[in-house]
Amino acid sequence: MSHSIAEALSQYPRETLTRRPTPLDYLPHLSKELDIEIYLKRDDLTDLALGGDKPRKLEYEIAQARANGADYLVTCGSAQSNHARLTTAAARHLGMNCAVVLSRDDFLAFQGNLLTVYLMGARVEFAETEDHWDLEEHALNLCQKLTEEGHTPHYIPISGTTPHSCLGYVSCGLELADQIEETGLEFDAIYTPFGTGGIFTAWLLTLRAREIMSPLIGISVNRELKPCEENFEKWWSALCELLDRDPAAERGVFEIHDDFIGREYGDPTEAGLDAIMLMAQSEGILLDPVYSGKVLAGLVAHQRAGRWIKGQRILMLHSGGTPALFAYHEAIRAHLEKRGVIIEV
Ligand SMILES: Cc1ncc(COP(=O)(O)O)c(C=O)c1O
Image 1 (tube, rainbow, N blue to C red):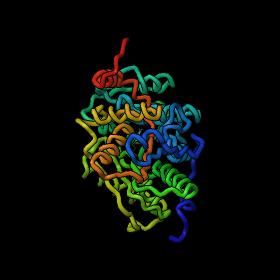
Image 2: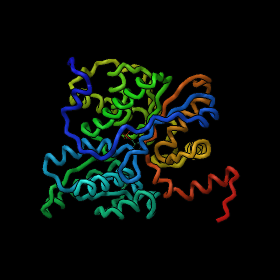
Image 3: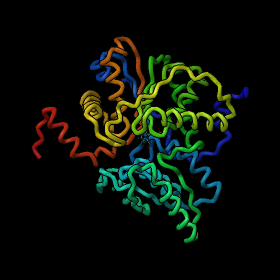
Image 4: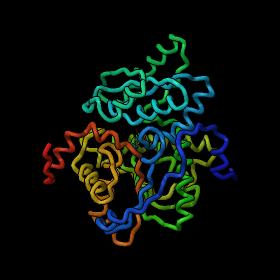
């Protein structure tokens, strides 16, 4: 186990879906507003079809699919799934087909991500589910149908998280470690979203391997603490195995918070909408109500509670998701009006 994590990563094939590195930007106006130094890792600016975290994940996952002769990518998600948008875009970019099973949830509108999925020509099926994490069975049935039609489907689970796709955020963690070393910045905390936990786990493992010990703080967008911790352990073991690392290696300080979800996944919480307004009006940067808005809501709540004080330096990941904003227009309009914005249309 003496090799570096970069060497271990280089054994795995990767398709190219985005240029790198993404910027690590200082946010002067938001920093002034919150009286702490805030930096943003701009993974909303990856190349593929309006950007986000998925291109990095899909680069490794699709390399596996192609090695197995796949011609169809199949996945599932919420009606406003970023993953459905970016899997469809990746398939088209690489000359493949894509099929998606989406849930009939509260944000089923021909808007945002769903509009782009249809536009890029994915085969779309809808399923009734209580929870979009239960869509797997429908997606596997669809794979069966595609096989009978003579295709070779490759199933990618919800959020695109698999052990191989997590390698995309190992690669991003290495990129971030390089940026931290080049700039000489030391962070008092690093905030990420926690959906399935793929990004969070891959960053923790990689940053610690590079001896960057800033506390890593995950803001859950979906699950309570216990299932998040179980997912974290699952991805941690899988990644250690793929990268031939000792699972007992130092993890340093890390936290997962489950108090910013709201009623359920995708709920546009008041704190999340306020955070979106704050970022938009201080920096002209667009967050989203499902992931990045909740991450900033967590950061702001911790700062307001006195955890972060003047002079401290915090990094936040913007993992994308902005197209979902358009499907939330009613909630956003109502929130802006509540905050005194006069909208004359
Ligand atoms: C924009 C965005 N950020 C973050 C995530 C969550 O990443 P993970 O599932 O690796 O925790 C997703 C997953 O769908 C996403 O679409």
